[in-house]
Image (cartoon, rainbow, N blue to C red; front, top):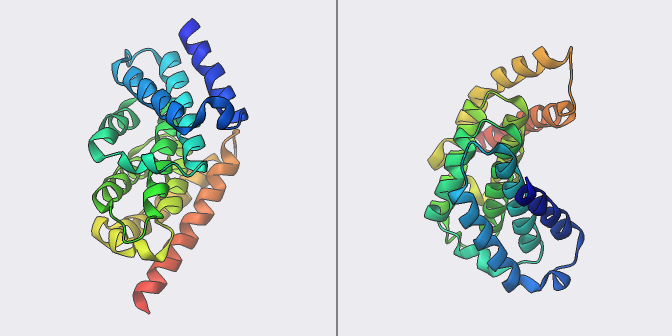
Length: 216
């Protein structure tokens, strides 16, 4: 519990403080490496520690991304595999959402690079996020994964990757299921309903736009 509370404090500090006050990008990359190592060795039944660690990781990588750190481009598919595994298997929705958002931040960084030198990593990120969209039972997690896909693959220069992983085709087939699931929870909306409703709307728009481009 003490370790989890300390990590949540770190999460708040990273979110609130300027990069310079946190020791700079190099120091924060060291923190990222330490947190990743901790996450890889955590007892996966310790949900409190899992949530605290993934929250801290999310805050750190968001700060590094906002600062334009080029070291994030050194992240490889193998570095992400253990995150994919946790995102697919953890029972706690908050942890799965943190993993989805961490992966998405990496994807957005890579998607902005000229000539897309990290195509294989982007493909693996897309496949992971699609797996969550089509397989997760929690509609909030699904919605966060959808938003992440839009963030990473929304730009036209990523259409070749979209085609290679069948992104638009699979999302097009998922639209009816998303509509049905959202309609079911309309009667008893929870705190995540705004995110879910927005994701449904954006899904329809994304698919419509991408399909119209294919026809043109």
